[in-house]
Image (cartoon, rainbow, N blue to C red; front, side):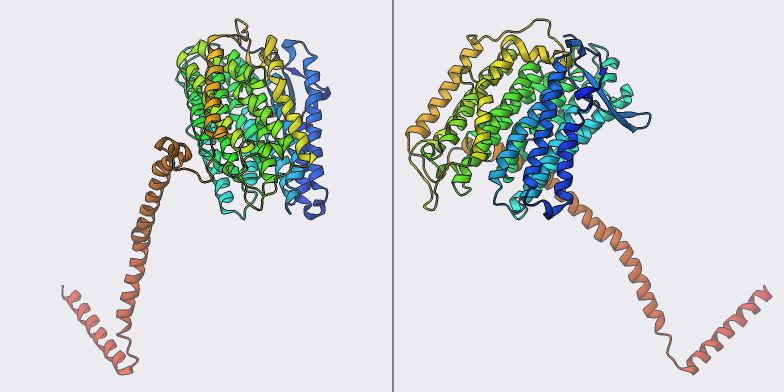
Length: 635
């Protein structure tokens, strides 16, 4: 593996003004929050305009970047001195960061436009768009920063914005709890990232990507490098909902559906993959186990998410389990080196399109079904929502890896690369593809096929153009983007200046053994779903199911495990602390006060208020004093 080219160019022009990508949505969020009700009538339009402005800047910067030679496509933009003598704040515009910027602003802008229709009846729509703009600004800072400090500031900004968006409908206790859960679980991962940054600074004396690239010796492997890699992986697991920090993801569906699309398709959950790829030097010294740990976590998570998705009747939670699984594929690829990087980032980009397409399609279904999320109460909707059905179906074909659609090239590329590195991980990924074929087919059949199972007051109808046009655009990416990125190694060659060039260029082999096995097992999964949910009558009430079904419905008992290992012991420690505080510290203080009070009460009894008593006391005292003096004088 060759190290990334370390030629940085300080530049002006469009790239020199790349900071505008962050400023536009940040200004939009400030105006919408600071000026309050004044912006109620047009605030949503301002939010969309700010996101689109960032997208335009990203596109122009992209075209300027590709105008340079390959060795000059790492451009540093200095902003200011953040910590004097320690950290300068700046941006790094290279193929990796600009790819993320295009995805965040492009898909993010479509979600903004969709939200105009979806949130049209919400009285707090202005505030919603302010949070969307804040989220986009934080995510852009995360991927564009040229050092870990800027990355961490964006990382925390994304956490704050996601808390605000998941809990946007605060009147629902479930939404408020879900927001707190996401915030707390992510703090665990953030602790790993922060400690990893401390060790990087202590070891190398810098947190800037450019300087770290020069300071790290190629092939350097030791305990410190392994520790840094594992700590960064912990941070990535939190943001990308990978095992063991995945429990927040499904609860986050309590937020409005555009939030689910924004967080779970194009932005927040991809941050962990970006962190791993950007920090590749810490994962790939020869002999280090950090890269293997990344792939193992990814393989385990892709199976766990797929199993969860197989048993969910809530359409949004089914898609959330799917997101968890697909990010697992990306993490698996990110642990396989430069070739794996290319397929992982390729799948990340295509997933941003087809998963946003399906999340927004689910929102369109909910919009026409009185916000009903239970797929057992759908059925036959393709006739009433033709645009939603067609676009959703294209996303479905892409995610299961139907030949020639986007997922066929990117996900199968990860599987084939995994087979070359580790047969066990490769076959686990094939099994995950079969489960994907089942749970996604199940979702399509229960929603759009079969007999209607609606409530009497349901009147399904197609969504307005402001919601369906973004679906159409996203479905186009699901159709052909994967082929464009993978064939001729376009994305791999584009990313090479940022992540390194492999010694041998891979090729895409559609008729390889892993490719044919993947297609076969996907077909089996889809066929089984057709027999269970396409031909057979779908019961309106969820059947009890087997232990395995219950295991999946309970999210693999992740919440129960967290409750047993962390919440219950925490409660016991809290009760012990309260007992010690009440009986120990407070008991000592209260006992001392009671002792003084009791003694004072007893002494008070000798104060009778009679002059003769006091005179007798003085006489007795004088006699005792005289006796004591005489005794001392005789001695």
